[in-house]
Length: 444
Image (tube, rainbow, N blue to C red; front, side, top):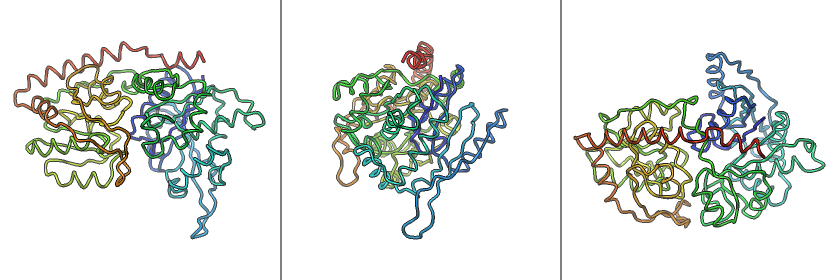
């Protein structure tokens, strides 16, 4: 196979669980002998660092600058808006077509979103969007894929147009596959478009989804949601195992009973920040740490900065050193219909106990391991002040009780749960069909 992946997250090493699971999927396919490539967004320094890393591992990066994409002129300065595009092979032998992250300065988000929505609904792109469509179409065509994998409406539309009679690319015969990482991505149900950038046109995307060759939902919960609200048949597969395994190997087990920090990754409302903050207030002698990520806004940082026992950290690409080496307990108090919760699996594989909510697909990721705590999940209603989901009041008592047990001076319970967590999660991941997604693609 020749599999071309279109990434939408920002950054060559994005903290997004969707980005990382997508990458783990094509990395695993490459290890089986398939040709793989991805388009992604990156800064110059990220690309240079990736090329150096590849070279240090004996991989020829074949770094080359592609022609700039011309996005017209700035209406205020009159200067030409040129978008850098770079092609290189990374340390895992994956071909990357990296689009500069300056895109959102050259093509502000609100304008890009409006143009994409108009294209999805009317089929006629603006001049700027037409230039980007040409870039993606030509890069997909030059790779000669057997499959194009994506999780966004724009790529769904572009690939549809590429295969139409009369298109310069109509001779291509690739399969089109959508990976559904969130209920917000789907064009129906109470969470449709609830997150910025997800599902730009429900009517257009609903029709296009039903014309694809395959739809992959990453949890049983999202699979059932698609059927319940949209009567949409999908294929459920857990994330590719290399999302969590390191080159097929189980990551290093941690024995963090002597550590003292309790962590939250992606500090924001839908990830349960109100629960985290209330715990920090009730337990002033416990050290808490919150990592920023895609959902974190200034209002969240302002709330956290008032708490003396909370440390705020930047998002990191070195999670082994910066997160898993230092955490004693991970909190995952998600309040939204989270598809899976990759950090749950990552922590449990390493023997780090996770106290998590029962929202969305989190229970699937938890594997029935302690502690799983009921929450009042969001309904899809938005807060008019912030534009985020309106967060209901929560019962903090069960969270406080579970956390105090794991932070007790007597570490017996912690050590027993850590051991059970690691053994159970390793057994689970080893029991998965490592090549399930590959077989599915081959049988299309």
